Length: 102
Image (cartoon, rainbow, N blue to C red; front, top):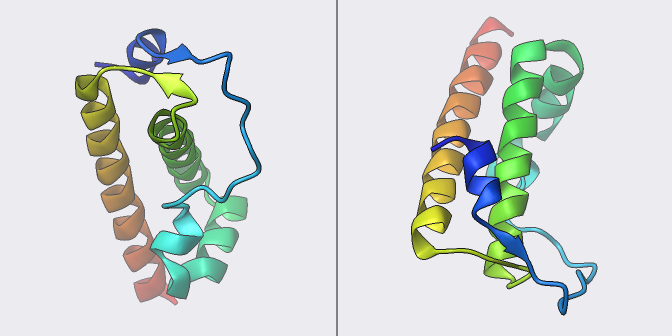
């Protein structure tokens, strides 16, 4: 299932107004020791920037579902969580590779 098809199966709840809340699982939270490296790679590495953007998009969609701003099935939520984990693994590999080069 692609991200586009997952998006089409979720519905935004109009009765919920998004409050200014901190979104869990942001990259800086997941990799606190690599915060500066993440910032540098986001600015200088196209592949990393795309991975980070995809991770952020999936992570925020999960957050909207879990905070009940969007309604979807448990199956879709689980697929999104698996996608986030795969993206996180790819990001961790890129961070490790960049650290070895330093």
